[in-house]
Image (cartoon, rainbow, N blue to C red):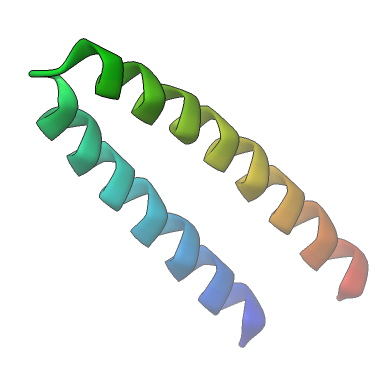
Length: 56
């Protein structure tokens, strides 16, 4: 159950930031912030996967 929830959460976060990046392309400063946030979220995805695999 928790694995499906984590996959859904990761997918939703990725879609939200992808949409935010598209919108932010009109403002370079905002686009840089969104790109950095996406990189941090990708690291969080890997961490959640690592924690989830150690719990299971």
